Image (cartoon, rainbow, N blue to C red):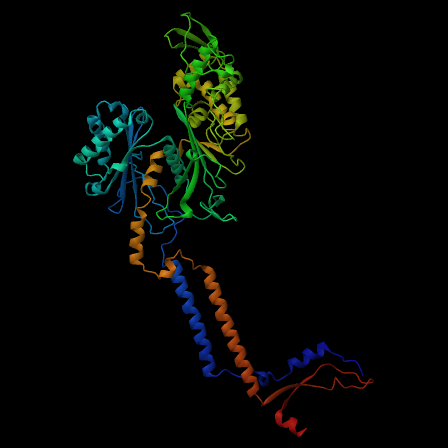
Length: 627
């Protein structure tokens, strides 16, 4: 049989000359068109119902929900107010906060902000002495607090004061007095304050908080201001957190924004707090705080586990006192067999002989007068040796060599500290971390060990006469004379605690010293208010649900999402295509007028014939029968 030959150019030439009007498909009937239109209409109805349910049946997530208002003028009646009084050891400070109505979305926290006056300053007032000084005269406690409440009352509209929450939370000083005295002081304020002011106050709003609570509140405040409790990436690093209470062999994780750790070194103590995102069973319970900032139970978006520890006596001023006791003890040979066994709290006894003691932590040429426990005066002579100073301070990280590590690994004074993932963990340093880095060195911000070490050595090696002239010429306006005197010591103490105590690596570049965040001073009082008002959003959520009712199956966690839309779309498209195919098959069976018959001559050709290509002819059914 001869070869079958396809002449493609000739084929397309024939196509151009065909009578295409005879090739048109059968037209749809009115019934068929209506059926397709109904299917398309059903799809659109389903689509818009789902979109309405998903995006309008629940309050939107406001990714920029928490923002600062430059001033608090004209807030209006829709704003709520909260007062927090921090009763510390040296005095008490009052802070005024406000927040607008809650958005109604369970994923949003309250938008709490510090109240700003017309000059752009935060509304804060401090009085002295500390509240603990009234331990023998608790009846005067309410009169002591009254000036603070009068001050903030002037910023709150009269008709909104009866809804203003009042919290009086005491810290260091009140922890030292007997519990009976604490109760007497709080009882007086709980009884007398309502007679003077209409603020909302309950017995649970008056409390002596522990150092652990204070650290947690500070951690909450820092991360809240940094928007770490919001949702969505928005240039924030994410972290997969193991779900608390998960008993399955396969661990479950929940992805959310990675929080930052916090370091705060004051005058008397130092705190560290950071989130635990993985296994935590081996962390002592008294070192771990687990809490929920959300208004609903089992809120994975707002449940946090935080390691928090307060080191009493490790603040910069307390550390200096311990260091001076250490120098006096070593100079008089009032130690145990070795320097490592020194206990700085043991009674110091010696003959009343004046001694000059070298102090590498003071600038060259500076002499400091100190007294021992018997009142004898001694003199510390500055040597200005930063490295020698740091070496001596390492011994102060453990006051007593008999203290053992409570559970490995440990940081300072035998305190357990879980391993920190320094490669992706960010920390913020407050108080002394900022003052030491910026008041004189002017390198506040991202901590760089090499740069800080260079500035510290240069400063410590500078003669006191030069430093004093810098102070008198006000070259460093944020630094007072005490800062110049003890800057060398505080710089060495900060780095010793950071690298030898907390074991931060020297090449760590994600520690940022700050005084303000978003132009605002961050206090633990903000975290306390946020945690203690976490159930208030329920009121806004109930109001929203009343105004925007949604089906019950949507309220269960809003399981429906964009995948349902895609699924419904695919189902409807498949239905339309199936129906069209069915119509085409039925129509082809009914069509008998025209047949598209290709020429069969090219199948049966003699070997000596040349086929000129594939030709299509269009014939009538009657012609076929005649043939």
